[in-house]
Every structure is written in C-alpha cells, then in structure tokens.
Length: 332
Ligand code: UFG
Figure 1 (cartoon, protein in one colour):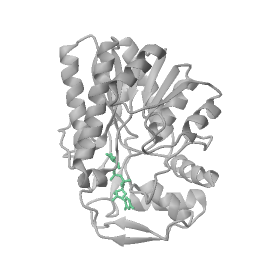
Figure 2 (cartoon, rainbow, N blue to C red; figure 1 turned 90 degrees about the horizontal axis):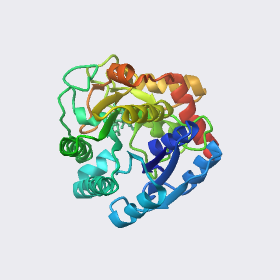
Figure 3 (cartoon, rainbow, N blue to C red; figure 1 turned 30 degrees about the horizontal axis):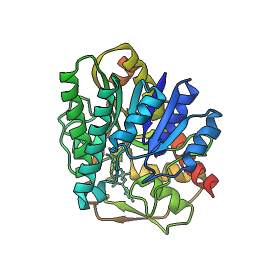
Figure 4 (tube, helix red, strand yellow; figure 1 turned 120 degrees about the vertical axis):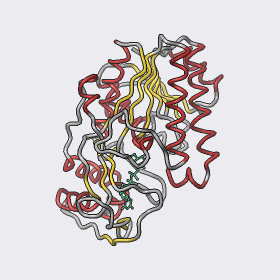
C-alpha cells in the first residue's frame, strides 16, 4: 500500500516513515524543508535500506501535489506538515493560520480529486488547553490557548465537516502528548534550529555543554514537586501508533480520535534527575518564573487507543532520556 507522508522530513514524520517502511508499506514523502533537512531523507533510506521518492514541495501548491498523487498512485495520507512553535505562533498568528490551514485544505482537495479516502492527521494534546480533569480522555472539552493549538483544533473541525459531507472516508485524528527520544539508529532525531523551546532538546544541549544551564519555568505549580508535569512519549512508540491507525483506517470507515500518550506524567525535576542518572551527566538548572501560557499538568488516558487500535507505549522514561542524548552525541 502506498502512503503519502506530508512533512516526512520532520521529527515525527521521519520516525513514522521509518516504521512504515519497516512494516512493509511503500511511501512517498513531500516536505518543503522549511524546518528540516534533505539529509533526513537519506538517513531514512539508510536506516531501512529501502528506497522511495521524495518531493521538495509545499503542500499548499495544489497542482504540484496533484501531480505527485497521480504519479505515485497514492492510496492513503498521513499529514504531518505544519508549523509547530507555540511561541512563534503567538507572535506571528497569520503565518500559522495561513500555513497550517491552507496546506490542509489543499491536501483535502487533492485527495478528493483523486478519490483518496484515508487520512491520518497529526493533532496535539494542546487542543485540551488547561484540562479540567486528569488523565485526559478524548471526550474532554476542547479549548486552545495559542494560535498553533487553534490551527490543530480548527483542522480537526474541518476534518469532521468533510467527513459529514463524504461519509465513506476513514479519518483518524491522533492527539500526541510530548514526544521525545530518537530512533535506535540515532541517525534521525529532534534537532531544532536555534535555541530550543521544548524541554528535552534544551536538556540535551545543556548536558552537551552547548548551553550553560536549564531554566525551569516555575516550581510553584500544584504538582508533586511544584514543577510542570507532562506525558512524555518515545517518538518510536508514537510512530508505531500511526501504523496501528493505518490498520484501523484500512478496516473501518468513520472518524476516530485517539490520544497517544503513556498515561504517566513526569515533572520537570524528575526529567532532569532521570536524564542525569541514565546518561551520567550533569544538567545544571535554575528555577525561574512561570512561562506565559504554561499549564501545571497534562497527561493522557490512552485506554481508547489500546482498546481500538491495540496500541500501547512500551518505552520507559529511561529509554527516552537515553535515546534523546545518544542522538545528540552521535550527531557530532
Ligand atoms: N520547561 C522548562 N524549561 C524549558 C522548557 C520547558 O521548565 O526550557 C517546562 C515547561 O514549563 C513544561 C515542560 O517543561 O512544564 C514541558 O515543556 P515543553 O515546552 O517541552 O512542552 P509543552 O507541554 O509546553 O508543549 C508541547 C509542545 C506543543 C504541544 C504540547 C502538547 O511544544 O506543541 O506539548 O501537550 F502542543
């Protein structure tokens, strides 16, 4: 089966491409390389020893995208391509609305034109905003606190409306919690340009002495030790979740939403301590004030994905901390 992976040179996209190829799917990747590098495409081929076509294009370009669908005989789509920096989305909301919404609409139109019925969409736990109840179930109220999150919420809404109008589709929405870690080859991983915004890419750079110390944003939250609590999930577990979603889309028509998380929340201090222990390194930190827009705690109830997809996260926090660091060390 031939799968189109949009944003397949990105962090989650590249790991999913690897798992798809390992599972015997054929793939085509499209990516505009706005936040990724062509080297990732070579790395995916090296890791899997498999070949595929890559097109450097913007999903917003309907004509070029249509050519890819026709030429490659695409049968299903996994849609990752999007801007994803929360802070930047607050500063440049139009950039986010324009890119993330326009490219999804373009993709859905081209799918329609080519009679393609299966799509898996990369959503985010940020659609839950500041959750009222923990762990978070898929039925929780949706509310977002920044333009990036709003685009994910809006795309979910668009997909629901498109499904209502075209009821023979299989639409699977995956809400990711906090992906970290790297493929065990350490040839692909998370490597943001500039100073990282997210916790794990920041920790690895401090451990690697590229940055002096970590700022922990607040220790006065109502959590186990006062620091923020999140559901960190190994990116390979997350990638495998897409294979399970694809199996579901091949079997059932409808629109389905799943949380992909471990179900366990860890605090920032627990992350630092585990990282130091597993990698035998120091991560100096300072407690600073809370970051605007942050919430105290966010972790999934992943039981629906277990029941309906047969998916569970298997990697431990130790695995995640180890693999995140190995990728950075091997990158040198
Ligand atoms: N944190 C620090 N210092 C840092 C970076 C982060 O203390 O330098 C803390 C945050 O305050 C938070 C935790 O580490 O408590 C995790 O922060 P991240 O920035 O890594 O992740 P967020 O949960 O804030 O957001 C991430 C993604 C979003 C996504 C969301 C889903 O950035 O795109 O997870 O839950 F929507």
